[in-house]
Each structure stands twice: as C-alpha cells, then as structure tokens.
Length: 112
Image (cartoon, rainbow, N blue to C red; front, side, top):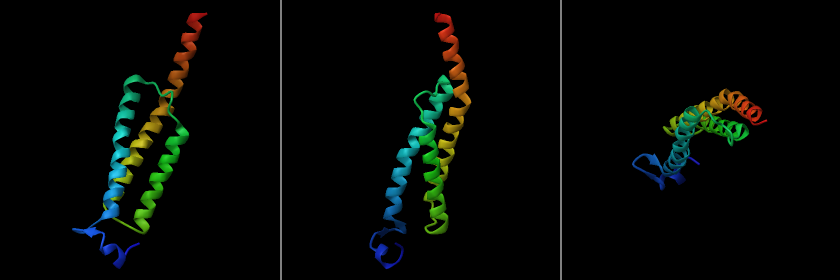
C-alpha cells in the first residue's frame, strides 16, 4: 500500500498507519511489564496460557518479518520489544510452573 495513494495519509514523513500501529503495540506492550513483575514477585503463574503467549510471540515475529521485507520503519522496534517481553513472561511461566505444582502438592499433603 505504498505509493501515491498513501501520500494523502502521510503527515510530516510519518505514515498515519504507523501511528495507529504504534498505539496498538504500545497498549499491548504496557501490560507485559506488569505481568512479568507480578510473576517475579509472587512466583504464581496459574491462569496464564502458554499457548496464548506462544501465539503472541508468533504474531510479533510475523510483524517483524513483514517490517523487514516490506515496510521497514521504526515500528519494528515496538514489535521487537513486545516479542522480548512476551518471551520473558513465557520463560517465567515455565520456570515457576514446577514450583507452583510442588507448592500445591505440598499444601494438599498438609491438609490430609
């Protein structure tokens, strides 16, 4: 969608679509540090979906590939940042899941 038709949408050299894409990625990106901090603080990951986080990683990686091949601009940095943050949260999920399982098993044994 590059070319003359997008010139009407460009302001100051910044593509309007990039602005909306950036806002979307920033809004998604705000939640990941909060989720990561909660996981690190509580070491509880129940309720998180590794499948969901994996799909998000795939989506962010696809966005990066698209930017590299067809539409290189600064938005690629937001895709990369989101990919890193989701990957950290996914890593924490697999790190703390065994600890959570042991904690649940230990607390069940105490109640018997």
